[in-house]
Length: 331
Image (cartoon, rainbow, N blue to C red; front, side, top):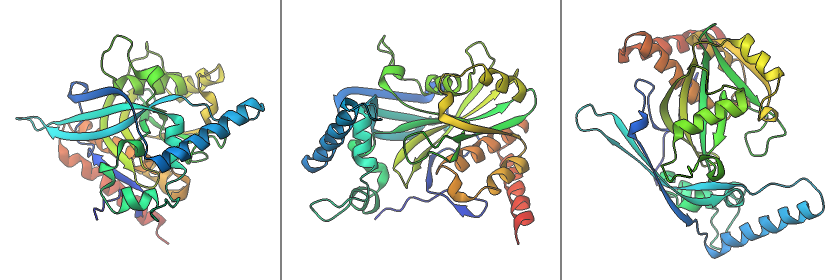
């Protein structure tokens, strides 16, 4: 049995496994290789039956004029492989994708603890008795891009709270600043060029936070994580908007945002480590999505290292801030 370690912050163990990244250096856009195979993910017969039942139920709701879940086109993750460049040993990530849809995702995500005819649940068979990183593609029909955003003009970090109306296990939780799942209709270029995770991050910022292509943006990919509770992959980005502040963004949102319904409130917090970690500590662990604390920690480390002209030891400033936050809240 392979046990993947869990990210721990402020004395709290999260369900998030940091697959790659420590915040010290980014993963460059040229070092991400996304391979796409236009072949539909295949379920075993029994699990395929679960999917068919989900599709029938949602189509029945639609026919009756009831709320239903729309089946959008997604990707399944076949594998993620990390290597290093020869001299600098910079990370190189290869992400292999194939076709899937939202009903494929629901089939496994809502049935992780449902017993199969063999007596094992999907969680027991694929995520606990073997390495979850090696789970078959049909178990990996979700890949999210998560962004931690800082406003450069007033130096604040943005936390977004997902609306209770959003579908999925992460509604009504504090989360990354912006989040988008990879979608074939949006993210598969028509000209045949590879899927760009950086482009997905920019789409998330535009659709959820009204950050436009004309806004100056400092964007870095700082890691990859795996939500061990819900078995969902995630890419972690840090974004800085040098020319914007809280007041400007809130004014924009009041005038309309593409996906305004996804969040019901926002919090802007000074971007220093003690303030950011204090905000996380002041909210119960169960009020956070599984990988949000890891994302914001990596973003803090990356900011500290950049301020120190690339010195890796700057990460310890974040750890020292963590200790101070914990000491002040220790009863």
